[in-house]
Image 1 (cartoon, rainbow, N blue to C red):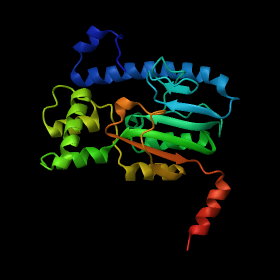
Image 2 (cartoon, one colour):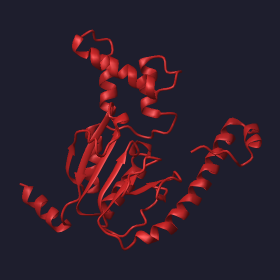
Image 3 (cartoon, rainbow, N blue to C red):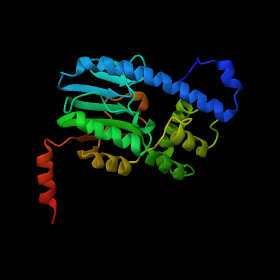
Image 4 (cartoon, rainbow, N blue to C red):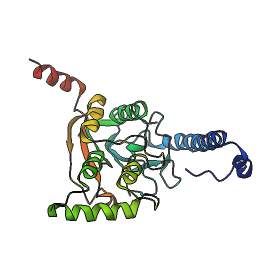
Amino acid sequence: MKIRRLGAPLIRALPVGLREATEQLAAEVVIRKRHIGGLIKARKYQDLRGMAMQLGCADKIKKGWLNVDLDPAADLTLDLREPLPFRDSVFKLIYSEHFLEHCNYPCEITRLMSECYRVLEPGGIQSLAVPDGEFALQYYTLRHSADPALAQLHAEVAEANRRWDPSWCKTPMDHVNYFMRQNGEHRWIYDEETMRLLLETAGFVDIRRREFDPELDDEARRFGSMYMQCRKPESHTLQTALQIKREP
């Protein structure tokens, strides 16, 4: 979030550390204001059931969904570090695309996954897309390979780097670092194993990697993304019984 107010000339005159802290404080003030507005607006959704919600939508609004972000274009402007302002078991589907990597790990993201579990109805689906950390690291180790079978991959990575990364990224390691950090906006990068553990810890079941879905996902983010899906158990009692049954 870019802050254009709060006495820009004065802020620029501060030492680097104080300037960064002041800018962060200014951003947090704006975030809180928007979050309070979202909390008030969320009241009209309290009695609805069977909804689909998109988290971290930015300006990519899905019609017929409840779109949540700090971007004013969203249906609700909410700080997703805070508890979700909804009753238990009201959503049939929760979706996010290239948002979860912006949450601090492990505390913030663990709380958010617990909240997603809470507000999903029994049997409800969570579907997500994040940058594929394993892919980035695997490609880095293969970057010098002359295997003809990798020629198309080399071309696709070069195009992705040109499209998404700043011009100052010159070396493969520059691109890996930008993929992981994105100027401090990325807080954690996932592989399948790490995401699976996060979802299992929250209580989700039927966790699987899925294919790109053109009806759901953004084609522009297809390359280099990891798509996963999971489900909230039909009932806590049933899930507990199944776990006991599987134990030796």
